[in-house]
Image 1: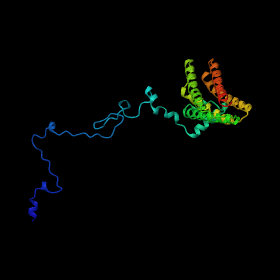
Image 2 (image 1 turned 45 degrees about the horizontal axis):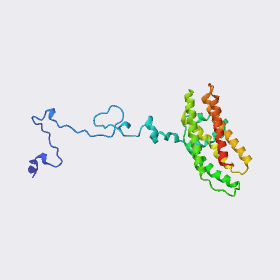
Image 3 (image 1 turned 60 degrees about the vertical axis):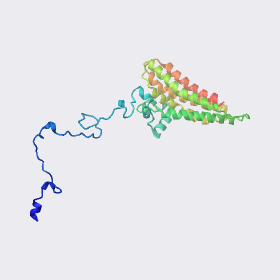
Image 4 (image 1 turned 90 degrees about the vertical axis):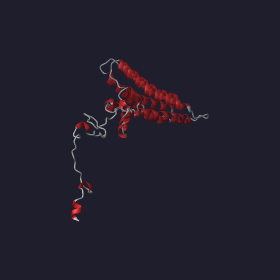
Length: 264
Protein backbone atom coordinates (compact mmCIF):
# COMPACT_ATOMS: atom_id res chain seq x y z
CA UNK A 1 0.00 0.00 0.00
CA UNK A 2 2.86 2.34 0.88
CA UNK A 3 4.61 1.55 -2.34
CA UNK A 4 1.49 2.63 -4.36
CA UNK A 5 1.48 6.04 -2.74
CA UNK A 6 5.23 6.48 -3.18
CA UNK A 7 4.97 5.83 -6.89
CA UNK A 8 2.41 8.60 -7.47
CA UNK A 9 3.79 11.65 -9.35
CA UNK A 10 4.22 14.50 -6.90
CA UNK A 11 3.12 17.09 -9.48
CA UNK A 12 -0.43 15.66 -9.36
CA UNK A 13 -0.83 15.75 -5.60
CA UNK A 14 -3.23 18.31 -4.16
CA UNK A 15 -1.34 21.18 -2.56
CA UNK A 16 1.99 20.39 -4.17
CA UNK A 17 4.05 23.07 -5.90
CA UNK A 18 5.28 22.11 -9.33
CA UNK A 19 8.95 22.52 -9.90
CA UNK A 20 10.22 25.16 -12.28
CA UNK A 21 12.01 23.45 -15.10
CA UNK A 22 14.31 25.59 -17.17
CA UNK A 23 13.91 24.78 -20.79
CA UNK A 24 16.32 25.62 -23.54
CA UNK A 25 15.42 28.64 -25.61
CA UNK A 26 13.25 30.19 -22.88
CA UNK A 27 16.01 31.95 -21.05
CA UNK A 28 16.01 34.86 -23.51
CA UNK A 29 14.87 38.10 -21.81
CA UNK A 30 13.20 39.31 -25.01
CA UNK A 31 10.80 36.40 -24.97
CA UNK A 32 9.69 37.00 -21.37
CA UNK A 33 6.02 38.02 -21.06
CA UNK A 34 5.44 41.68 -20.35
CA UNK A 35 3.62 42.56 -17.13
CA UNK A 36 0.55 44.77 -17.33
CA UNK A 37 0.79 47.84 -15.09
CA UNK A 38 -2.29 48.49 -13.01
CA UNK A 39 -3.50 52.07 -12.59
CA UNK A 40 -3.30 53.02 -8.96
CA UNK A 41 -5.29 55.88 -7.33
CA UNK A 42 -4.36 59.41 -8.41
CA UNK A 43 -0.91 60.55 -7.42
CA UNK A 44 -0.49 64.27 -6.82
CA UNK A 45 2.74 66.18 -6.81
CA UNK A 46 6.29 65.02 -7.40
CA UNK A 47 7.64 62.69 -10.05
CA UNK A 48 5.02 60.12 -10.98
CA UNK A 49 6.29 56.61 -11.49
CA UNK A 50 4.78 53.99 -13.75
CA UNK A 51 1.32 52.83 -12.79
CA UNK A 52 0.06 56.21 -11.56
CA UNK A 53 -2.60 58.18 -13.36
CA UNK A 54 -2.49 61.94 -13.58
CA UNK A 55 -5.14 64.10 -11.93
CA UNK A 56 -6.71 66.38 -14.55
CA UNK A 57 -6.12 70.04 -13.89
CA UNK A 58 -8.85 72.68 -13.92
CA UNK A 59 -7.78 73.70 -17.41
CA UNK A 60 -8.48 70.15 -18.63
CA UNK A 61 -12.05 70.23 -17.41
CA UNK A 62 -11.65 68.60 -13.98
CA UNK A 63 -11.73 70.20 -10.54
CA UNK A 64 -13.33 73.51 -9.56
CA UNK A 65 -13.37 76.28 -12.15
CA UNK A 66 -10.70 79.00 -11.84
CA UNK A 67 -11.59 82.00 -9.70
CA UNK A 68 -8.58 84.24 -10.14
CA UNK A 69 -9.13 85.42 -13.71
CA UNK A 70 -11.90 86.95 -15.79
CA UNK A 71 -13.75 83.62 -15.86
CA UNK A 72 -14.20 83.92 -12.08
CA UNK A 73 -16.69 86.75 -12.61
CA UNK A 74 -19.20 84.17 -13.87
CA UNK A 75 -18.30 81.58 -11.23
CA UNK A 76 -20.18 81.38 -7.92
CA UNK A 77 -17.03 80.14 -6.15
CA UNK A 78 -15.51 83.59 -6.59
CA UNK A 79 -18.08 85.19 -4.30
CA UNK A 80 -18.32 82.65 -1.47
CA UNK A 81 -15.45 84.34 0.36
CA UNK A 82 -17.51 87.54 0.66
CA UNK A 83 -20.29 85.74 2.56
CA UNK A 84 -18.05 84.03 5.11
CA UNK A 85 -19.46 85.85 8.16
CA UNK A 86 -21.42 84.75 11.21
CA UNK A 87 -24.04 86.48 13.33
CA UNK A 88 -21.55 88.00 15.78
CA UNK A 89 -19.51 89.61 13.00
CA UNK A 90 -22.59 91.08 11.32
CA UNK A 91 -23.98 92.47 14.58
CA UNK A 92 -20.63 94.02 15.44
CA UNK A 93 -20.48 95.76 12.08
CA UNK A 94 -24.08 96.93 12.37
CA UNK A 95 -23.34 98.52 15.73
CA UNK A 96 -20.19 100.13 14.34
CA UNK A 97 -22.23 101.79 11.58
CA UNK A 98 -24.39 103.49 14.21
CA UNK A 99 -21.40 105.15 15.90
CA UNK A 100 -18.99 106.98 13.58
CA UNK A 101 -16.65 107.51 16.53
CA UNK A 102 -16.23 103.76 17.12
CA UNK A 103 -13.09 103.64 15.00
CA UNK A 104 -11.97 102.89 11.50
CA UNK A 105 -14.52 100.57 9.94
CA UNK A 106 -12.12 99.53 7.17
CA UNK A 107 -9.62 98.22 9.73
CA UNK A 108 -12.35 95.94 11.13
CA UNK A 109 -13.24 94.46 7.75
CA UNK A 110 -9.74 94.46 6.27
CA UNK A 111 -9.25 90.70 6.63
CA UNK A 112 -12.82 89.76 5.70
CA UNK A 113 -14.95 92.31 3.80
CA UNK A 114 -18.41 90.94 3.12
CA UNK A 115 -21.24 91.56 0.70
CA UNK A 116 -23.80 89.93 2.95
CA UNK A 117 -24.51 93.23 4.69
CA UNK A 118 -24.92 95.07 1.40
CA UNK A 119 -27.50 92.64 0.04
CA UNK A 120 -29.36 91.94 3.28
CA UNK A 121 -29.58 95.56 4.50
CA UNK A 122 -30.50 96.94 1.07
CA UNK A 123 -33.26 94.37 0.61
CA UNK A 124 -34.58 94.96 4.12
CA UNK A 125 -34.59 98.70 3.55
CA UNK A 126 -36.57 98.32 0.32
CA UNK A 127 -39.35 96.35 2.01
CA UNK A 128 -39.34 98.59 5.08
CA UNK A 129 -39.65 101.77 3.01
CA UNK A 130 -42.44 100.37 0.83
CA UNK A 131 -44.51 98.91 3.67
CA UNK A 132 -44.01 101.57 6.33
CA UNK A 133 -44.32 104.35 3.77
CA UNK A 134 -47.83 103.16 2.95
CA UNK A 135 -48.57 102.79 6.65
CA UNK A 136 -47.43 106.35 7.30
CA UNK A 137 -49.77 107.73 4.65
CA UNK A 138 -52.62 105.72 6.17
CA UNK A 139 -51.96 107.09 9.67
CA UNK A 140 -52.23 110.62 8.36
CA UNK A 141 -55.97 109.96 8.09
CA UNK A 142 -56.60 110.59 4.43
CA UNK A 143 -60.09 109.41 3.42
CA UNK A 144 -58.95 108.44 -0.08
CA UNK A 145 -56.05 106.21 1.00
CA UNK A 146 -54.99 103.36 -1.26
CA UNK A 147 -52.03 101.01 -0.99
CA UNK A 148 -49.41 102.35 -3.42
CA UNK A 149 -47.70 99.38 -5.06
CA UNK A 150 -45.32 101.70 -6.92
CA UNK A 151 -43.52 102.33 -3.62
CA UNK A 152 -41.86 98.91 -3.97
CA UNK A 153 -40.42 99.48 -7.45
CA UNK A 154 -39.35 103.03 -6.63
CA UNK A 155 -37.68 101.97 -3.38
CA UNK A 156 -35.89 99.06 -5.07
CA UNK A 157 -34.58 101.25 -7.88
CA UNK A 158 -33.38 103.95 -5.52
CA UNK A 159 -31.80 101.78 -2.82
CA UNK A 160 -30.17 99.16 -5.04
CA UNK A 161 -29.00 101.78 -7.50
CA UNK A 162 -27.50 103.92 -4.76
CA UNK A 163 -25.86 101.02 -2.89
CA UNK A 164 -24.16 99.70 -6.05
CA UNK A 165 -23.47 102.69 -8.26
CA UNK A 166 -22.29 105.26 -5.68
CA UNK A 167 -19.54 103.07 -4.11
CA UNK A 168 -18.47 101.99 -7.58
CA UNK A 169 -18.25 105.63 -8.69
CA UNK A 170 -16.09 106.60 -5.71
CA UNK A 171 -13.89 103.56 -6.34
CA UNK A 172 -13.11 104.65 -9.90
CA UNK A 173 -12.67 108.26 -8.78
CA UNK A 174 -10.12 107.41 -6.10
CA UNK A 175 -8.34 105.00 -8.43
CA UNK A 176 -8.05 107.81 -10.96
CA UNK A 177 -6.70 110.14 -8.26
CA UNK A 178 -4.06 107.59 -7.28
CA UNK A 179 -5.58 106.25 -4.06
CA UNK A 180 -5.46 102.46 -3.49
CA UNK A 181 -9.22 101.91 -3.14
CA UNK A 182 -11.07 98.59 -2.96
CA UNK A 183 -14.52 98.26 -4.50
CA UNK A 184 -15.50 95.32 -2.25
CA UNK A 185 -14.63 97.29 0.89
CA UNK A 186 -16.58 100.27 -0.44
CA UNK A 187 -19.65 98.12 -1.10
CA UNK A 188 -19.32 96.64 2.37
CA UNK A 189 -19.02 100.01 4.10
CA UNK A 190 -21.84 101.67 2.14
CA UNK A 191 -24.08 98.67 2.71
CA UNK A 192 -23.75 98.88 6.48
CA UNK A 193 -24.20 102.66 6.37
CA UNK A 194 -27.82 102.09 5.27
CA UNK A 195 -28.71 100.21 8.43
CA UNK A 196 -29.64 103.35 10.38
CA UNK A 197 -32.28 104.17 7.75
CA UNK A 198 -33.95 100.82 8.45
CA UNK A 199 -34.31 101.78 12.11
CA UNK A 200 -35.41 105.33 11.39
CA UNK A 201 -38.23 104.18 9.09
CA UNK A 202 -40.01 102.58 12.04
CA UNK A 203 -40.03 105.97 13.75
CA UNK A 204 -41.09 107.85 10.64
CA UNK A 205 -44.57 106.30 10.82
CA UNK A 206 -45.35 108.64 13.73
CA UNK A 207 -47.86 111.13 12.28
CA UNK A 208 -45.99 114.22 13.48
CA UNK A 209 -44.30 116.06 10.64
CA UNK A 210 -41.88 118.00 12.83
CA UNK A 211 -40.75 114.82 14.60
CA UNK A 212 -40.29 113.05 11.26
CA UNK A 213 -37.94 115.77 10.05
CA UNK A 214 -35.92 115.60 13.24
CA UNK A 215 -35.61 111.81 12.97
CA UNK A 216 -34.55 111.78 9.32
CA UNK A 217 -32.07 114.62 9.76
CA UNK A 218 -30.40 112.84 12.67
CA UNK A 219 -30.30 109.52 10.83
CA UNK A 220 -28.93 111.11 7.66
CA UNK A 221 -26.29 113.00 9.64
CA UNK A 222 -25.07 109.86 11.44
CA UNK A 223 -24.94 107.84 8.22
CA UNK A 224 -23.19 110.64 6.30
CA UNK A 225 -20.60 111.10 9.06
CA UNK A 226 -19.95 107.36 9.10
CA UNK A 227 -19.24 107.30 5.36
CA UNK A 228 -17.14 110.48 5.30
CA UNK A 229 -15.06 109.54 8.36
CA UNK A 230 -14.13 106.19 6.86
CA UNK A 231 -13.31 107.63 3.43
CA UNK A 232 -10.91 109.98 5.16
CA UNK A 233 -8.35 107.17 5.35
CA UNK A 234 -8.17 107.18 1.54
CA UNK A 235 -7.63 110.92 1.15
CA UNK A 236 -5.15 111.60 3.95
CA UNK A 237 -2.11 113.41 2.64
CA UNK A 238 -3.95 114.52 -0.50
CA UNK A 239 -6.03 117.58 -1.24
CA UNK A 240 -9.20 115.54 -1.77
CA UNK A 241 -11.59 117.09 0.74
CA UNK A 242 -14.08 117.54 -2.09
CA UNK A 243 -14.43 113.72 -2.14
CA UNK A 244 -15.47 113.68 1.51
CA UNK A 245 -17.91 116.52 1.00
CA UNK A 246 -19.46 114.76 -2.00
CA UNK A 247 -19.84 111.49 -0.08
CA UNK A 248 -21.39 113.32 2.88
CA UNK A 249 -23.89 115.19 0.70
CA UNK A 250 -24.92 112.10 -1.27
CA UNK A 251 -25.57 110.12 1.89
CA UNK A 252 -27.54 113.00 3.36
CA UNK A 253 -29.52 113.36 0.12
CA UNK A 254 -30.55 109.70 0.32
CA UNK A 255 -32.14 110.29 3.70
CA UNK A 256 -34.01 113.33 2.43
CA UNK A 257 -35.22 111.35 -0.57
CA UNK A 258 -36.66 108.66 1.71
CA UNK A 259 -38.48 111.26 3.78
CA UNK A 260 -39.90 113.32 0.90
CA UNK A 261 -41.03 110.49 -1.35
CA UNK A 262 -42.27 107.91 1.14
CA UNK A 263 -43.10 109.62 4.44
CA UNK A 264 -44.85 112.86 3.50
